[in-house]
Image (tube, rainbow, N blue to C red; front, side, top):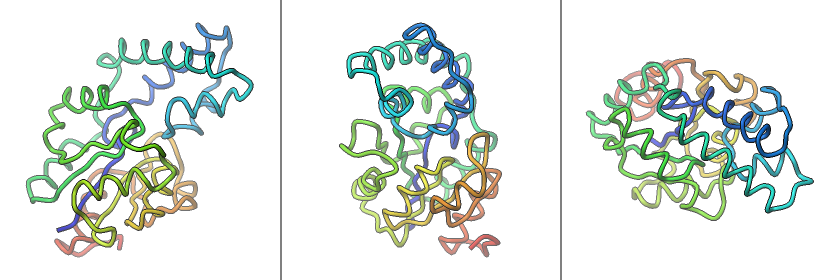
Length: 224
């Protein structure tokens, strides 16, 4: 039985506006600085601490931790007001679950907010495992989070796929030996996802489902 793994932000939940707003808030309140959308977007998909460290490498660990806390407070407060489901994600996931495929989450987000977001839209119970920021010492683009999820699910890389919207997702999945589907939604382009290791790129959830079922031998795939 094939195992299907999914990133969360930008793949299942549309959190882009919330993330951008939270970063802008953190830089303004924590540093008195402005930050551009272009500067922020290139780091989507990486752990929060890493994003701040890469963007402001001169800051001390204490300053980075303070920015993270400012970000998190804003993000949690505004979460339910801004987050929506990526179009078709709920229907696609329920269709895969109904056919008996084991599903898992692999995200760089904390467990509390991951579960909250999935529960908000009635999706949490669809997943057998949730691998989050604290699940592994190394994070995407390292393959360890994907490998850890497969280990928990008892799956094998040659019968598994990982779906995400960032190059960090694609690299993590590819280096873990699973097939990778890059969703072109509102962050990264086709060329960026393919260069990072996407076997297939798609623009909608029906295409995701078709691709995964095709790989699993459930229907002829146009994307294999």
